[in-house]
Length: 189
Image 1 (cartoon, rainbow, N blue to C red):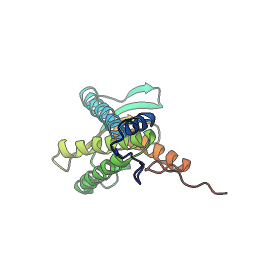
Image 2: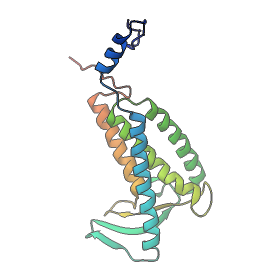
Image 3: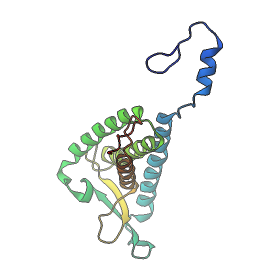
Image 4: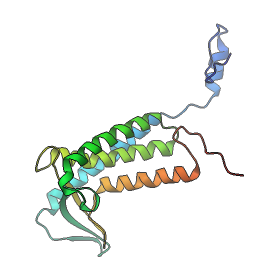
């Protein structure tokens, strides 16, 4: 007998429920995947910032790929493009709220791309939030470590890259018509 949500109900018949559950493909543990994506990206961000502070403090710019990609250590009290430098505590509070919202969505995500996108997004948000909470000049006022420099672009870090990659994955899912719950938008005729 099937319940309304598609799960089997054991009516005491024994093996039919077991056989039915074994024939259905197992859903991947998507919250675990989101958590793994978060952990890997968050640790890479924090390690790269520690290395940047250790090796780039009081040093001239270092070229990685000619003049295309250089390393320059800066501390950003604001948001993207150094906007809102006097609103660092408000930015930190918004990042906390955004983190909670992303965790809520990640727990409900269906699909590998959604799980990865939300895990990577959470890593980006919390990577910069960690700086705002624990770096100088103080709690909720800390400056974000930025060190990657492209021509004609603000200096950034791996947390910023994570946010951009996650945004791209979310846009791809939206263009494909794949909703967070795994359903698809109906195609126009």
